[in-house]
Image (cartoon, rainbow, N blue to C red; front, side):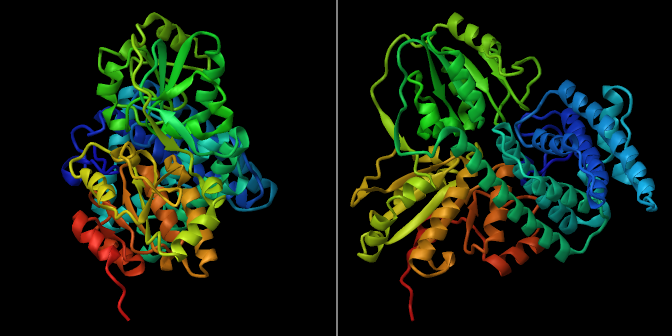
Length: 551
């Protein structure tokens, strides 16, 4: 196997024996094969669209296939084999439809080989061998690390974007133009040795696509549950039976809350589900009791201590300990071998497991944190923010956020937040916030110095806030007293980074380490165009950001 798609990749270069995430070589090969075949499907889908023919089942499958290969989503070889079987059926149908449409339009069909010609081998072992034959190392040898690294930058950005598009689709929001873009870009990734400038251009187009998808997801979330509002969230448990919901899927949480009404079960959020408490349509349920624990990488210890049932939606699952494997459940695309998977949102097994478990035997202190500072909430008090900046009461804004992880060096973000001067405001989002969101930062003229914008996809809110402030001050976003201090771990963070670069945002500090797939040559291009830079030390970075501007 070879995988270098996440920040914690082995030795900083790539996982070759087993994934740091827990991915076995067998699963890695099947995921590589799923991605390979999906590119072949998009080769046909793009050409069919050029002739005016669309197939929604193919469109949706591409999103689900890409999302399935995101870090910490699907570790179950049997479920991936099922996806490969469906892919083969769809690709055969796409080929027949392509040939039929060409005949009808009097057009000579292209002879599509490679990715489009893939057919599945018979049986699990044979499929694994197929996957091992088309791993990234083949392209690294034939194309070199620069071209391959840029191809993977595009691929990982598409994976992250597909995750957000899938979230929006679950809530009934989709856009046909988004499907077209996925097919076009996946088709481009089948080209051997493409020019570097075309790769960079396409990477920026992924950023543009992700911006559209995040806007779609924002519309889906607010359309279903209302606009987030500043909300106090309890972070200590209540006495009684309990269910913990982790991941990102608000629809799963809503359905679970409906099904647990009147059952005397408290429902808690974990990790990226924390922002759910700010949505009116979710916080109306009185048994949405609070948030338990922190970011995803702490789950093995936190889930072990949690005395109830656990539901893992979307991604961020780790290998369950035997002590809680019998009371953790998966839903959607997430899967782990031997863990019960919930289908059609029938959460009866989860509820029964919660009722059978001990629950919390005592109540913790009434300790709370604040969430819900999305773009509507912040822009609703924009006049106060603008006045505070003009009066010199707010000197600078820091966006400190992104994915958290277990790799050493992430204490940088805790230390950086602690070092932010008292006349500065911190915006935060995604699970990186758990490094400092329980600290007390106070307020400036009634404006909290720590504003939790939401989940990772709520980077869209941060963009809206920055754009509105730039308009109010009649300047560009890069001219604002705003600095981005970002942490990354997996492919959704890659998609967000590409969106920020598409928007022309400069001077981003990224850590704790740079992606292994970004070679020195590619990094040189990004530095030249966007002045992107790695984090260094808190003192050095803070001094560089806040140093007085000289004429």
